[in-house]
Image (cartoon, rainbow, N blue to C red; front, side, top):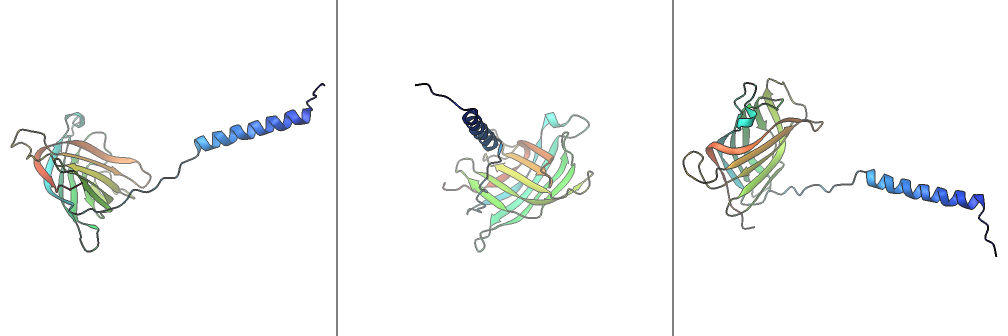
Amino acid sequence: MKTQISSMSVWKVGALLLLAWLGTLTTINAQQPQIPTLQVCNLPSVVDGTGTVTILARQAGGFTGSFTVQVKLTCDPTTGYPVGSLVVSGISMNDSAAQGTVVATTFEQLTSTGRATPTAYLNGRCTVDSTAGTIPGCRYWIMFADNNGVAGTASGTPDVVGFLIFDKAGHRVAYGTGPLAHGHIAVAPTPF
């Protein structure tokens, strides 16, 4: 018995294969939904101190390669929201569009973890006093690692601070990460 395949059947199979291939391609290229991070101010989050970071690789072009952080934050036990102040000043680093001072205007997340070298993560909105002018939609992310030492006074690992400032379009405006050359940022240890 001879099986005859009609041109209509070949067309249908071809069309189905094409649709399956396009569906796979669309799925691969589709933006995947993301679940937002948990915005928890976990007690006993306390971040307090002042310190200056100097990064030699950020000095080219007449910049000091430095920034100074002043922070005093805690979690309000009544509301569960972070409260306090954060200023990143003296930003003078190459590869940053904004030079000057960033002041946090909101604290949307303050989360800390660790006992031996507690680390805190913070993000929110900000304003910038800079030669670059105002930064519409200014947002920040900053991390503090308390390595239990006062920079410049004791041997050991200095505290580390890293920050990122970006605008409403998500463009990087300023950033820097490095060990403190002077000062200390205390982060309260957590039991977890």
